[in-house]
Length: 255
Length: 236
Image 1 (tube, one colour):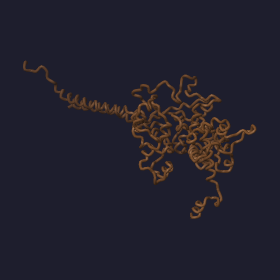
Image 2 (cartoon, chains in turn orange, green):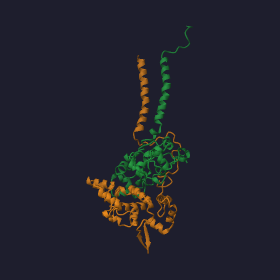
Image 3 (cartoon, chains in turn yellow, orange):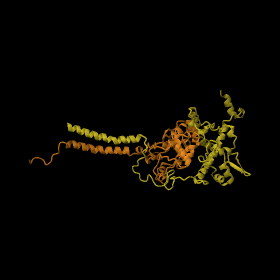
Image 4 (cartoon, chains in turn red, brown):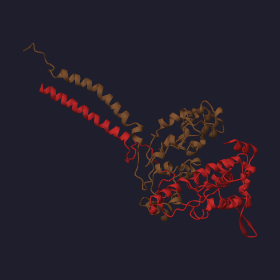
């Protein structure tokens, strides 16, 4: 009898012990952990070649990706700009090369400015064809890069601004910092600027706004300019007689 | 004396035989379960959540503030690699908002010295896989499919196993995973919103395709599964 109990105890312990690895695995499966992945067969998972943003011992500062040398441009930057342009005008693939090879047009597209008698001035009109596609692209890019601060309607009350006002209302002025409300893009102050001027603001920033030239390619910036015009026009108060007849009847019928 | 057998199995050998037989069956079964459960990609890869130098919360920035993924990961639709933002991108807002916050110490240091913040990579593939973000995102594969609900993660963790068998599920039949191209960064997208879907596709609610996946597969020229499962496609 005593021997039988010992046997049960022994087998029971073995079964219980066998459950421990399963419990460890279950924990590992459902709990977040900062222990790096375990590679059971790690062959060639990590190779000495340089992946983007991987550090490298070749350089003293261990930066695998090298910073820009002043006055130069990465080949990819050029290709990206070209690609965006190509997307904006799928039928004008040849024209893109003209845009970039013609010196004066290149200046207009890249800087939104022209030189007359040695005096630089902003160009009045977007120097690339404004198509429905370009405006749609502009809307998409505006919603990504401008809307967080200026809001989806451009009135200067995006989610970031709302959050900052909340901080201020809660008395967290140190956290709220030196934030100023972004300008209302639909008002005359912005809308009176020439197209080249708006492009310049997007490119180089103004007052508290940062420069976006590293985040947004050239043609997308022009697309944004076109969409800023859309926001201005669509939210402008116009006299009723200037509306199309169909819209007027619809409005008069609405009670 | 002489009629006694040469050897008699002791009494306990009956029990021992039973135990040995049971063990011979149960131990292999146990090992198979242990290996299958323990060595599979879900156990080994998922839920890796490294402690980052800056406690950046995607749940706050991408979730509450609703900032689009592409505001920071700008090149995702153009390049193979969805680049981490340079410190300048943080400074765009944090020059003014919470400029002295202790949580941003690394950001200020990086901005001052030009040295990158030592972020830890969460979703990493083996070096012999050449994953291309642009190819996937432009084909209507959402960030969500591989990264999970990042807009709900306070600290980013790996949400999907990212092993080859997992990749192949989609490469064998991509249709169910597709969505309109301009909704890839909208992690709360649902095909149930017919009006929005129609606007995305440039159609009307009446002309919406019955099988969205098959329709998008054709519209975005997704190659057939034979090409999509070619070894060379990812291991070139």
